[in-house]
Length: 240
Image (cartoon, helix red, strand yellow):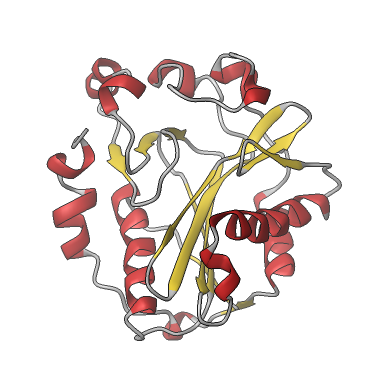
């Protein structure tokens, strides 16, 4: 597996990069499995593919403060990201790993590697609520996936030292929640891992056996069409 550490200037560009990588892999233009890491450098909100913005987001607050609101191509609930939140994504070949076409197998396969990476740093974590990484009784990572014909995109958040007051300021209580949440507010439900970004990146590379890909060998991705029709489009981002 190849490793790319790349944070683009805007949340829209970062989401579009993963979307474009999945499309390029599935079309046969970039046939290498890839682990990509990037960082939140501002506060923003990301809706799940089927999330309802009016139900899950305090839209007046988001709009008043000029906070970007985007929609990803994968499922799951709405999340807030801010500095101190790291994102990861893996693209996996379904020709090489056909068992991952089963959603439970895909969740188990990826989340076990995320759990192992955190464990290398001395943190005892478990997977709960389908695909949450949990330390104690608090969520430290939320995850989601998209399956194409022959490739899978699996991505998620890893909370390092984010200001955890942001989700309560910007999000309503979610319409669905795992049993272990027990109705808690976001600030009582989420937790930071409290590890360095460098240490966690190294642990993730070890768990995935990912080798750095030279920058001149990175996939050449055209993001503009995806930003135009999806991540920069009011119609896409607020379609529900």
